[in-house]
Image (cartoon, rainbow, N blue to C red; front, side):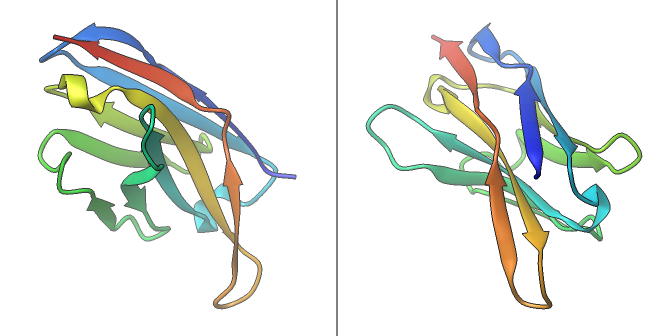
Length: 120
């Protein structure tokens, strides 16, 4: 069973920074596609950033140039460095793991989420 545990959320002023971490266990972390999602009150969950096993990254347009996703396969940990935070970044942030179970089939796992609140 894959387990994902997020940490690093909190309250920060606009313009500030936070770094989220996601500790993974229960699978071969290095072959998982990993991602950060967020969900604000009354809104759908949305993809913030993703990183594939080879290291290629992708970002939502709203966070490009401000957020950086990275992974440390030796530590089984995913990170999200968030700079120049804006009030609209306020949301619960979730870690996601796409675990390959065959060549084109992945099973998704989610962490419990961590709250990020950006005050204006």
